[in-house]
Image 1 (cartoon, rainbow, N blue to C red):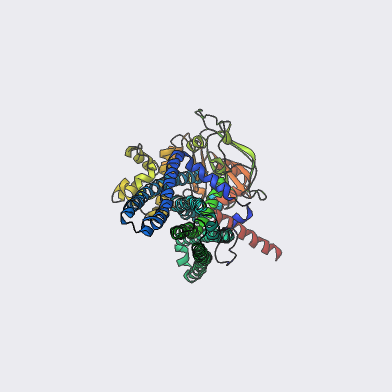
Image 2: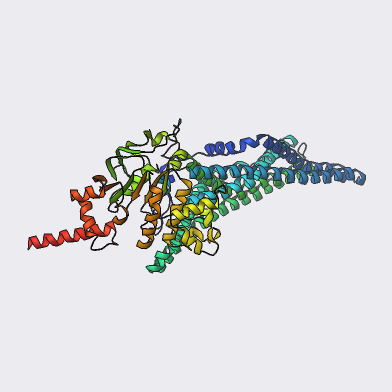
Length: 626
């Protein structure tokens, strides 16, 4: 469970990164190199251009030095012309080659980011349902948007400037030492101070940048939750509370960015001060050297040194401007690295078995499972469902009915025991084969943006309209589809908001029939939100579909299970009754009690019938006490 924000209790802040060993910058560099490695030859070409551009930049002050100490001092106008032409040529070549390597490197960076986005998305969608149950959607969206965007700045902009500036700085230092080592040492005296300052602020900026990303993820998660639950917010008049909560997270979001800005501003200001002080040292040292006739120190050398010092400070100043961006990008890279390190608990078998049997039977063999292993939801469940058998699962909310379905579809792995289909352990089947073998119609089906047809065929254009129509007729969805303006081409709003809950469930039934015509069919309370008239139509249509087909029906009302081949009654994670409708009535257990109570209230759900029984028991106990 996510920790509560250190600043407020009004929203959830993902802070789990603090519990894990920190990821080093070297690890992040290796991770980035993995994505850049396919472009290694292009990077070598960029580096060669970078060296050339830096060399041209170093030539310019030296040409000024030659002009000042030569033709200008001698008053030779003709001598200035070739030097000026060389200067203009060097400037033109500098800008052309600089454009080429910047464009080339940015292209490489964007190509690497394309791979990162693709790998991250594929890594996320292969996670099991346990991951999606505990990970806020806003956090996942933040990784795919904000964090990737921060990496974009690093690979497309920051890394270009840093590489260019480091090469330029190294070249300037070498040229200055070659021209006059004494003046070079004076000019570069402030650089160690600037380096120490940069290291100090690096340690200050990194955690602040991490905090910014954490709050950004919490911000997106908050918005996603509030907008998704806007109906509840408005129905229960929670607008003021939601407004108050948003005000707090919005303020935290603002303050985190202001903290990052302040730290970066202090850093840039100190570097600017050091730059000014460094130029003052050059003027003092160089002026003193010219006046006292230091060996090799001329007016031209002094002018060249002033330009070289200015150029040497430019890379450091630009580094300061990029430093906050780099640290933000590295913290984003750390969060991406952590997400890439998450492995699904439901893993593919290294050597999956092929399923080629025509008959499908299911065997739950002494299964124990809990979402929290310390609190099992299912306890030592043993159940065998024969091929072609229609089995209904009955029980109160929280008894473990839906959990059985999730384990059969392998959304989770059992803690103990095993589940087999036709003698093959689910863990020995490939997930693709298992999804074809088990078709689940969930209690709350989801509709994608697109048409009715898109949602039935799941954007698989090889599925014909005839197939969709046949499945829709079986599921009794065709009558309402025919009433829509464009039939199968009717456009759905996000989440299928322009359909009723019952219509969405009818679509889900038809979709399961299309994509799993021979599969084990699981109906997870699929008729819970459908009126009794529609439910009767569905039962009529499904009777033909379920004939001779292995199926599980999680029952919401007893009227849906009477014709099942077997009825399983589950209570507190254990099977307490198992038999046909007539067998269980004869036993006179919980199922029989629920069945007879239903005569008084035919439309009552199983939970309602259980509550009626509890109320009756309490009343009888009071009479006995009296």
